[in-house]
Amino acid sequence: MKYGKMMKGIGVAALALTVVSSCIVGGTLAKYTTTATGSGSAIVAKWAPKFTQGGADFTSSTVVKLSDTTATGQNKVIADRIAPGTQGSFAFEIAKGDTEVAFEYSVEISDLSDNWPEQLKFYTDAECKTEAELVQNAAGKNVYQVIKPTQILTNSSSTGDSGTIYWKRAFEETGAPESIAARDALDSSLGAKENENDRTMTFKISCIATQIQTTQTP
Image (cartoon, rainbow, N blue to C red):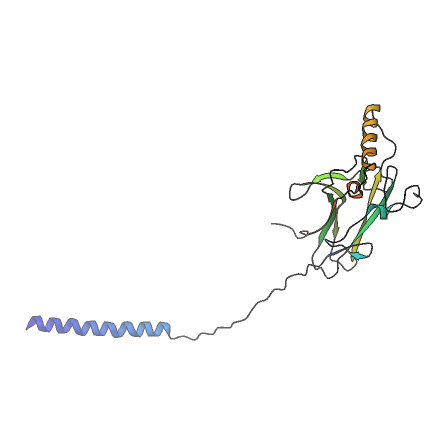
């Protein structure tokens, strides 16, 4: 009898504890809440620099013929040809357009053909005294930097820029007589080739625009 009463008492106590616990939990969760939900957005800055050469867009199909850029007054060589003693220049322009970030641009020359004369060189000045620097590009390739990196900012006064590449094929040789004779022989050999294709020299021009970081890094 006592055992039954004891079990009944334990059951009543457990039920009471359950009711009290439910009230406590219910009271804890019974509160006002408000959730406000918004959204975010970000517009990517536009990237639209454009290179031109001679007023036309510079693309993979553009061919710059040095003979078309020969300086005036050098009429002792037939048109559409270059020879020792000729020189000239050509310009590149870059338009900022709608570009919305600061960037820098440069122009490189590479991949000179195997028949390229030693005396035909590119320069950064009109007097042809400062040769274009031979540097390594981002791919680790040797290139002539004919226009060094120049910054184009995003302020309203900056709309673009231009740069000029100068070239010259020296006429007078310098150095030891045997070296001069050897180079003259190479020039003569190239000029004596019957096939025009064998006398055609080629090179690659790369116009490069790269965003620059203008904010301070941590």
